[in-house]
Length: 154
Ligand SMILES: [Cu+2]
Image (tube, rainbow, N blue to C red):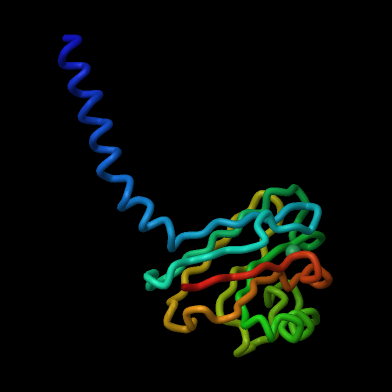
């Protein structure tokens, strides 16, 4: 019995070792970021390798405040468009996720979430250039000054 148990443990270890490189490769295209009640993202930068055909970003709101008071979204833009997208979105309102309708400068975005909520977005990397200058921000009014970061592709 002991022998069999050891064999099973060894097989399980081998299995997880064999699966690990594939799991890592898949995970590189799936990113997680959190926002809190102090108007902060937990990461100043996100990076994905150019080998990703698609990227999924999942935003967790780890706070307790409702989205009307401390809502957060995750919006990807060309770095040069950050302030303009934030300004245009300010008056758009919560139902529009604080994004100006049809704003072509928005490359990808999640909806606005409140405390305890999660949202994600999946987008093709064909809309990005490797080595391009991208940033992400929260467009809830007044948040982008603190809530922004660098998005690296490639
Ligand atoms: Cu926010």
